[in-house]
Image 1 (cartoon, one colour):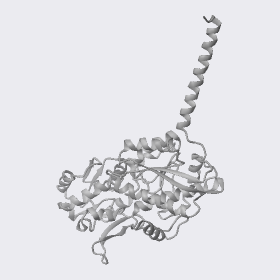
Image 2 (cartoon, helix red, strand yellow; image 1 turned 135 degrees about the vertical axis):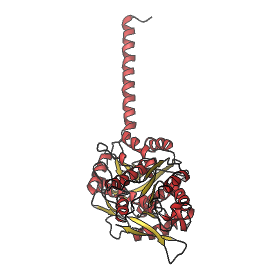
Image 3 (cartoon, rainbow, N blue to C red; image 1 turned 45 degrees about the vertical axis):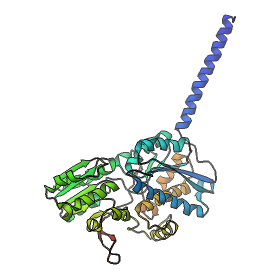
Image 4 (spheres, helix red, strand yellow; image 1 turned 90 degrees about the horizontal axis):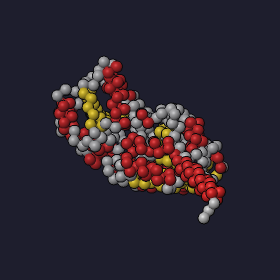
Length: 413
């Protein structure tokens, strides 16, 4: 039987071990959450991203991933990426996980990219809906999120150094030329249908605000779920208002449904605008008859908007030629966007003298306004929002050389 002093000694040892275990678990937990260590000096940079292999975002997500992979191929055909901090080159490996268009699954997989695959660079999936869950994960782990096309204006906060928008301006900036075009052409009775998500809501608010300030408030402003594919009810309501223009802000599947259904309504004769024909014209033409697309309006994007002078990466013409040579597909905007994300990552690592995540962000700030790619000028504000890329308004018109195809003609500005 132990004496009282022996019992006290055992108790003190157990208490010491308990305190040690608590401290150890706290430190281990912290190590899992925070990723502030510099990139390891290795011969490989691991880039983690997600893609939608099925579901409503598949048609947009897969082309973006294809563009990012194309960039990695072009880099690895040479020496790889030059890492300034180490004065050496590294090859690129992409780890891409399938989120199946599910934001809930996406959040889990973004966590896995960091905790299981230990990626060096984190890249979001397509669009605001699948980028949103990545933002909190990036903040938690203190990793820079290279946001390809998640343009929701509410994402970008002054106190968050870990979010940088690469390939498009924030969505409240997108429709400024559109609103000015509507006023200039005196389309004064404008009806808007928009999907209730950050991307489309921001566009709606911009157009409605600009028109209202000009004393031409929209005659209708109708929100629908992002999953909407039946527009009969809002279209019938709008018909009664005799609009001169109908604007639909949605994703690819929304645009396909709207274009097909509005063409069979009385609204086919008014100005119709949607966002995705300019991004994915070939895919849109596979699901919407040419007569339903002819004379509709959209945003114009690269590669239709071409850049012949760049400071990093391929010019538009060189990109189109090399992309087709490797993939046997004519590139669309989302292919360009994925490639452009890679170019921005490459430019940041070539500039960074400190390869910690905050060092990479400092390099992005340093190249902002000075980097020109096949998407134009890369320029971000202090919150990481994109300022340098503009989206003119274009009209889909007949291609007299290929009667079964349409092409985009910029009409404003």
